[in-house]
Length: 350
Image (tube, rainbow, N blue to C red; front, side):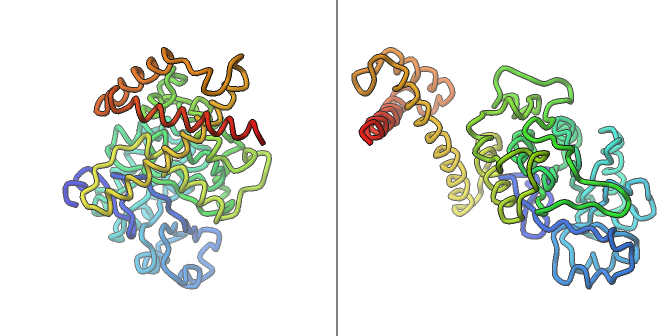
Protein backbone atom coordinates (compact mmCIF):
# COMPACT_ATOMS: atom_id res chain seq x y z
CA UNK A 1 0.00 0.00 0.00
CA UNK A 2 2.80 2.45 0.79
CA UNK A 3 4.25 2.27 -2.73
CA UNK A 4 0.80 3.02 -4.13
CA UNK A 5 0.31 6.04 -1.87
CA UNK A 6 3.72 7.41 -2.87
CA UNK A 7 2.33 7.68 -6.41
CA UNK A 8 -0.24 10.17 -5.12
CA UNK A 9 -3.15 7.77 -4.77
CA UNK A 10 -5.59 9.10 -2.16
CA UNK A 11 -8.03 7.08 -0.06
CA UNK A 12 -11.57 8.49 0.11
CA UNK A 13 -13.41 6.32 2.61
CA UNK A 14 -12.91 2.76 1.37
CA UNK A 15 -12.07 3.85 -2.19
CA UNK A 16 -8.53 4.40 -3.46
CA UNK A 17 -8.46 7.17 -6.05
CA UNK A 18 -5.49 7.34 -8.38
CA UNK A 19 -4.23 3.80 -8.90
CA UNK A 20 -5.87 0.61 -10.05
CA UNK A 21 -9.42 0.71 -11.36
CA UNK A 22 -11.35 3.96 -11.73
CA UNK A 23 -14.05 4.40 -9.09
CA UNK A 24 -17.55 5.87 -8.82
CA UNK A 25 -18.22 8.25 -5.93
CA UNK A 26 -21.75 9.22 -4.99
CA UNK A 27 -22.91 11.67 -2.38
CA UNK A 28 -21.35 15.04 -3.14
CA UNK A 29 -23.14 17.32 -0.68
CA UNK A 30 -22.96 21.13 -0.83
CA UNK A 31 -23.88 23.07 2.28
CA UNK A 32 -23.77 26.38 0.42
CA UNK A 33 -27.45 26.37 -0.53
CA UNK A 34 -28.35 26.56 3.17
CA UNK A 35 -26.10 29.62 3.66
CA UNK A 36 -25.26 28.56 7.21
CA UNK A 37 -28.87 28.79 8.39
CA UNK A 38 -29.23 25.04 8.98
CA UNK A 39 -27.09 22.91 11.27
CA UNK A 40 -24.62 20.99 9.10
CA UNK A 41 -25.19 17.82 11.12
CA UNK A 42 -28.91 18.04 10.33
CA UNK A 43 -28.13 18.24 6.62
CA UNK A 44 -25.60 15.43 6.64
CA UNK A 45 -27.26 13.19 9.26
CA UNK A 46 -24.98 10.32 8.26
CA UNK A 47 -21.57 9.93 6.69
CA UNK A 48 -21.12 11.44 3.21
CA UNK A 49 -18.33 10.94 0.71
CA UNK A 50 -17.64 14.54 -0.37
CA UNK A 51 -18.91 17.64 1.43
CA UNK A 52 -18.53 21.30 0.45
CA UNK A 53 -18.78 23.85 3.30
CA UNK A 54 -20.43 27.26 3.29
CA UNK A 55 -18.33 28.65 6.11
CA UNK A 56 -15.68 27.66 8.63
CA UNK A 57 -18.42 27.07 11.21
CA UNK A 58 -19.43 23.88 9.36
CA UNK A 59 -15.96 22.38 9.24
CA UNK A 60 -16.17 20.46 12.56
CA UNK A 61 -19.27 18.63 11.33
CA UNK A 62 -17.55 17.92 8.01
CA UNK A 63 -14.49 16.57 9.82
CA UNK A 64 -16.77 14.19 11.70
CA UNK A 65 -19.13 13.09 8.91
CA UNK A 66 -17.28 13.39 5.59
CA UNK A 67 -14.70 11.24 3.84
CA UNK A 68 -13.30 14.30 2.03
CA UNK A 69 -13.82 18.06 2.03
CA UNK A 70 -14.54 19.90 -1.22
CA UNK A 71 -12.93 23.21 -2.11
CA UNK A 72 -15.75 24.31 -4.40
CA UNK A 73 -15.32 26.03 -7.73
CA UNK A 74 -17.51 28.93 -6.53
CA UNK A 75 -15.15 30.02 -3.74
CA UNK A 76 -11.61 28.98 -4.62
CA UNK A 77 -10.53 32.60 -3.99
CA UNK A 78 -11.80 32.58 -0.40
CA UNK A 79 -8.31 31.87 0.93
CA UNK A 80 -9.19 31.83 4.68
CA UNK A 81 -11.86 29.18 4.06
CA UNK A 82 -9.58 27.25 1.69
CA UNK A 83 -6.87 27.24 4.39
CA UNK A 84 -9.27 26.13 7.11
CA UNK A 85 -10.78 23.36 4.96
CA UNK A 86 -7.33 22.11 3.97
CA UNK A 87 -6.30 21.83 7.62
CA UNK A 88 -9.15 19.51 8.62
CA UNK A 89 -7.10 16.35 8.29
CA UNK A 90 -9.33 15.05 5.47
CA UNK A 91 -8.51 14.49 1.81
CA UNK A 92 -9.16 17.74 -0.10
CA UNK A 93 -10.99 17.71 -3.44
CA UNK A 94 -10.04 20.87 -5.35
CA UNK A 95 -12.52 21.86 -8.04
CA UNK A 96 -11.44 24.06 -10.94
CA UNK A 97 -13.13 27.41 -11.30
CA UNK A 98 -14.56 27.59 -14.83
CA UNK A 99 -12.29 30.50 -15.81
CA UNK A 100 -9.17 29.13 -14.11
CA UNK A 101 -6.20 28.00 -16.14
CA UNK A 102 -4.49 24.71 -15.46
CA UNK A 103 -1.63 26.55 -13.78
CA UNK A 104 -4.00 28.37 -11.40
CA UNK A 105 -5.77 25.11 -10.61
CA UNK A 106 -2.53 23.30 -9.80
CA UNK A 107 -1.21 26.20 -7.72
CA UNK A 108 -4.35 26.06 -5.59
CA UNK A 109 -3.95 22.29 -5.22
CA UNK A 110 -0.34 22.78 -4.09
CA UNK A 111 -1.48 25.38 -1.57
CA UNK A 112 -4.09 22.99 -0.15
CA UNK A 113 -1.47 20.25 0.07
CA UNK A 114 0.90 22.56 1.94
CA UNK A 115 -1.84 23.67 4.37
CA UNK A 116 -2.97 20.08 4.97
CA UNK A 117 -1.40 16.66 4.95
CA UNK A 118 -0.78 16.45 1.19
CA UNK A 119 -3.81 14.34 0.29
CA UNK A 120 -5.25 16.37 -2.59
CA UNK A 121 -7.46 15.30 -5.49
CA UNK A 122 -8.22 17.47 -8.52
CA UNK A 123 -11.81 17.67 -9.75
CA UNK A 124 -13.18 18.94 -13.05
CA UNK A 125 -16.80 20.01 -12.77
CA UNK A 126 -19.36 21.99 -14.75
CA UNK A 127 -18.65 22.23 -18.47
CA UNK A 128 -16.00 19.57 -18.54
CA UNK A 129 -12.70 20.17 -20.31
CA UNK A 130 -11.43 16.63 -20.15
CA UNK A 131 -8.31 17.34 -22.20
CA UNK A 132 -7.21 19.93 -19.65
CA UNK A 133 -8.09 17.51 -16.86
CA UNK A 134 -5.88 14.88 -18.43
CA UNK A 135 -3.02 17.36 -18.79
CA UNK A 136 -3.39 18.48 -15.16
CA UNK A 137 -3.20 14.88 -13.98
CA UNK A 138 0.00 14.31 -15.95
CA UNK A 139 1.58 17.59 -14.86
CA UNK A 140 0.78 17.26 -11.15
CA UNK A 141 0.88 13.52 -10.51
CA UNK A 142 -2.33 13.97 -8.51
CA UNK A 143 -5.45 11.86 -9.05
CA UNK A 144 -8.39 13.51 -10.80
CA UNK A 145 -12.16 13.19 -10.57
CA UNK A 146 -14.72 14.18 -13.20
CA UNK A 147 -18.13 15.24 -11.90
CA UNK A 148 -20.55 13.86 -14.52
CA UNK A 149 -23.69 14.45 -12.48
CA UNK A 150 -25.13 16.86 -15.04
CA UNK A 151 -24.31 14.75 -18.11
CA UNK A 152 -23.72 11.15 -17.17
CA UNK A 153 -23.36 10.38 -20.88
CA UNK A 154 -19.84 11.77 -20.61
CA UNK A 155 -18.81 9.01 -18.20
CA UNK A 156 -17.12 6.89 -20.86
CA UNK A 157 -15.30 9.88 -22.34
CA UNK A 158 -14.12 10.99 -18.89
CA UNK A 159 -12.65 7.57 -18.07
CA UNK A 160 -11.04 7.40 -21.51
CA UNK A 161 -9.47 10.81 -20.83
CA UNK A 162 -7.85 9.45 -17.67
CA UNK A 163 -10.28 10.28 -14.86
CA UNK A 164 -9.44 8.22 -11.78
CA UNK A 165 -13.03 8.47 -10.63
CA UNK A 166 -16.48 9.78 -11.51
CA UNK A 167 -18.73 11.76 -9.20
CA UNK A 168 -22.44 11.06 -9.64
CA UNK A 169 -24.93 12.82 -7.41
CA UNK A 170 -28.03 11.89 -9.44
CA UNK A 171 -29.47 15.32 -10.21
CA UNK A 172 -28.86 19.00 -10.93
CA UNK A 173 -27.21 20.99 -8.17
CA UNK A 174 -27.15 24.80 -8.14
CA UNK A 175 -26.06 26.65 -5.04
CA UNK A 176 -27.01 30.21 -4.15
CA UNK A 177 -23.72 31.62 -5.36
CA UNK A 178 -24.86 31.19 -8.95
CA UNK A 179 -22.26 28.55 -9.73
CA UNK A 180 -23.85 25.70 -11.61
CA UNK A 181 -22.65 22.25 -12.48
CA UNK A 182 -24.56 22.20 -15.76
CA UNK A 183 -22.57 21.12 -18.79
CA UNK A 184 -24.44 23.32 -21.22
CA UNK A 185 -25.79 20.37 -23.12
CA UNK A 186 -22.43 19.05 -24.23
CA UNK A 187 -23.79 15.55 -24.65
CA UNK A 188 -21.61 13.07 -26.47
CA UNK A 189 -19.64 15.77 -28.19
CA UNK A 190 -18.42 17.18 -24.87
CA UNK A 191 -14.81 18.31 -24.96
CA UNK A 192 -12.19 15.68 -24.35
CA UNK A 193 -9.32 16.96 -26.46
CA UNK A 194 -9.24 20.75 -26.56
CA UNK A 195 -5.94 20.83 -24.71
CA UNK A 196 -3.00 20.52 -27.12
CA UNK A 197 -4.93 19.05 -30.03
CA UNK A 198 -7.71 16.65 -30.89
CA UNK A 199 -8.84 14.17 -33.47
CA UNK A 200 -6.20 11.46 -33.80
CA UNK A 201 -6.52 8.51 -36.14
CA UNK A 202 -6.63 5.80 -33.49
CA UNK A 203 -9.42 6.63 -31.02
CA UNK A 204 -8.38 4.16 -28.33
CA UNK A 205 -4.76 5.29 -28.38
CA UNK A 206 -5.86 8.89 -28.57
CA UNK A 207 -8.19 8.47 -25.63
CA UNK A 208 -5.35 7.04 -23.58
CA UNK A 209 -3.40 10.24 -24.27
CA UNK A 210 -6.42 12.48 -23.77
CA UNK A 211 -6.23 13.98 -27.29
CA UNK A 212 -9.44 12.66 -28.82
CA UNK A 213 -12.98 13.99 -28.86
CA UNK A 214 -15.74 11.91 -27.32
CA UNK A 215 -17.42 11.26 -30.67
CA UNK A 216 -14.19 9.68 -31.95
CA UNK A 217 -14.25 6.97 -29.28
CA UNK A 218 -15.31 3.45 -30.23
CA UNK A 219 -18.99 4.00 -31.03
CA UNK A 220 -20.10 0.60 -29.78
CA UNK A 221 -18.66 1.20 -26.30
CA UNK A 222 -19.87 4.75 -25.90
CA UNK A 223 -23.32 3.98 -27.27
CA UNK A 224 -23.68 1.15 -24.78
CA UNK A 225 -22.89 3.56 -21.96
CA UNK A 226 -25.31 6.27 -23.09
CA UNK A 227 -28.55 6.96 -21.25
CA UNK A 228 -30.94 7.90 -24.02
CA UNK A 229 -30.64 11.40 -25.58
CA UNK A 230 -28.02 13.96 -24.69
CA UNK A 231 -28.43 16.25 -21.73
CA UNK A 232 -29.98 19.11 -23.72
CA UNK A 233 -32.71 16.78 -25.00
CA UNK A 234 -33.81 14.92 -21.89
CA UNK A 235 -33.90 15.26 -18.10
CA UNK A 236 -30.95 14.10 -16.06
CA UNK A 237 -31.49 10.40 -15.23
CA UNK A 238 -32.28 9.25 -11.71
CA UNK A 239 -29.49 8.45 -9.32
CA UNK A 240 -29.70 4.68 -9.68
CA UNK A 241 -29.60 4.83 -13.48
CA UNK A 242 -26.87 7.47 -13.49
CA UNK A 243 -24.73 5.38 -11.17
CA UNK A 244 -25.27 2.31 -13.36
CA UNK A 245 -24.01 4.19 -16.42
CA UNK A 246 -20.99 5.52 -14.53
CA UNK A 247 -20.16 2.05 -13.24
CA UNK A 248 -20.41 0.63 -16.77
CA UNK A 249 -17.95 3.30 -17.90
CA UNK A 250 -15.36 2.60 -15.21
CA UNK A 251 -15.73 -1.13 -15.83
CA UNK A 252 -15.70 -1.36 -19.62
CA UNK A 253 -13.68 1.65 -20.73
CA UNK A 254 -11.46 1.33 -17.68
CA UNK A 255 -10.56 -2.22 -18.66
CA UNK A 256 -9.28 -0.94 -22.02
CA UNK A 257 -7.48 2.17 -20.77
CA UNK A 258 -6.25 1.64 -17.21
CA UNK A 259 -3.32 -0.58 -16.36
CA UNK A 260 -3.85 -2.60 -13.19
CA UNK A 261 -1.31 -4.44 -11.03
CA UNK A 262 -3.45 -6.30 -8.47
CA UNK A 263 -1.61 -7.46 -5.37
CA UNK A 264 -4.09 -10.00 -4.01
CA UNK A 265 -6.19 -12.84 -5.43
CA UNK A 266 -9.53 -11.00 -4.88
CA UNK A 267 -8.13 -7.88 -6.57
CA UNK A 268 -6.90 -10.00 -9.47
CA UNK A 269 -10.30 -11.66 -9.89
CA UNK A 270 -12.02 -8.26 -9.83
CA UNK A 271 -9.65 -7.05 -12.55
CA UNK A 272 -10.40 -10.14 -14.63
CA UNK A 273 -14.12 -9.49 -14.23
CA UNK A 274 -13.66 -5.99 -15.63
CA UNK A 275 -11.69 -7.27 -18.61
CA UNK A 276 -14.31 -9.97 -19.24
CA UNK A 277 -17.05 -7.32 -19.18
CA UNK A 278 -15.19 -5.37 -21.85
CA UNK A 279 -14.66 -8.56 -23.86
CA UNK A 280 -18.36 -9.40 -23.71
CA UNK A 281 -19.27 -5.90 -24.88
CA UNK A 282 -16.87 -6.10 -27.81
CA UNK A 283 -17.98 -9.61 -28.75
CA UNK A 284 -21.61 -8.48 -28.83
CA UNK A 285 -20.61 -5.65 -31.13
CA UNK A 286 -18.61 -8.00 -33.34
CA UNK A 287 -21.57 -10.35 -33.71
CA UNK A 288 -23.74 -7.45 -34.83
CA UNK A 289 -21.18 -6.45 -37.46
CA UNK A 290 -20.76 -10.04 -38.60
CA UNK A 291 -24.51 -10.23 -39.14
CA UNK A 292 -24.32 -7.11 -41.31
CA UNK A 293 -21.52 -8.70 -43.36
CA UNK A 294 -23.66 -11.77 -43.96
CA UNK A 295 -26.47 -9.62 -45.33
CA UNK A 296 -24.11 -7.77 -47.67
CA UNK A 297 -22.08 -10.69 -49.04
CA UNK A 298 -23.28 -12.46 -52.21
CA UNK A 299 -22.39 -15.78 -50.60
CA UNK A 300 -23.17 -15.87 -46.89
CA UNK A 301 -22.86 -18.31 -44.03
CA UNK A 302 -20.04 -20.81 -43.65
CA UNK A 303 -19.72 -21.08 -47.45
CA UNK A 304 -18.69 -17.45 -47.60
CA UNK A 305 -15.70 -17.71 -45.26
CA UNK A 306 -12.53 -16.08 -46.55
CA UNK A 307 -9.48 -17.97 -45.28
CA UNK A 308 -7.01 -15.29 -46.43
CA UNK A 309 -8.90 -12.51 -44.68
CA UNK A 310 -9.25 -14.56 -41.49
CA UNK A 311 -5.51 -15.25 -41.48
CA UNK A 312 -4.74 -11.57 -42.03
CA UNK A 313 -7.05 -10.75 -39.13
CA UNK A 314 -5.16 -13.13 -36.83
CA UNK A 315 -1.81 -11.68 -37.93
CA UNK A 316 -3.03 -8.14 -37.18
CA UNK A 317 -4.37 -9.18 -33.78
CA UNK A 318 -1.10 -10.90 -32.91
CA UNK A 319 0.69 -7.57 -33.26
CA UNK A 320 -1.60 -6.20 -30.54
CA UNK A 321 -1.42 -9.37 -28.43
CA UNK A 322 2.14 -10.67 -28.93
CA UNK A 323 1.98 -12.76 -25.74
CA UNK A 324 -0.72 -14.92 -27.30
CA UNK A 325 0.70 -14.84 -30.83
CA UNK A 326 -0.85 -16.28 -33.97
CA UNK A 327 -0.82 -19.88 -32.77
CA UNK A 328 -3.05 -19.22 -29.76
CA UNK A 329 -5.15 -16.49 -31.35
CA UNK A 330 -6.13 -18.55 -34.41
CA UNK A 331 -8.42 -21.04 -32.57
CA UNK A 332 -9.89 -18.24 -30.46
CA UNK A 333 -10.82 -16.17 -33.51
CA UNK A 334 -12.11 -19.25 -35.32
CA UNK A 335 -14.46 -19.94 -32.42
CA UNK A 336 -15.66 -16.32 -32.42
CA UNK A 337 -16.25 -16.35 -36.18
CA UNK A 338 -18.12 -19.65 -36.04
CA UNK A 339 -20.29 -18.43 -33.16
CA UNK A 340 -21.23 -15.37 -35.21
CA UNK A 341 -22.05 -17.48 -38.26
CA UNK A 342 -24.19 -19.89 -36.24
CA UNK A 343 -26.10 -16.95 -34.74
CA UNK A 344 -26.57 -15.39 -38.19
CA UNK A 345 -27.96 -18.64 -39.59
CA UNK A 346 -30.25 -19.03 -36.59
CA UNK A 347 -31.62 -15.54 -37.06
CA UNK A 348 -32.08 -16.22 -40.77
CA UNK A 349 -34.36 -19.16 -39.96
CA UNK A 350 -36.49 -17.16 -37.52
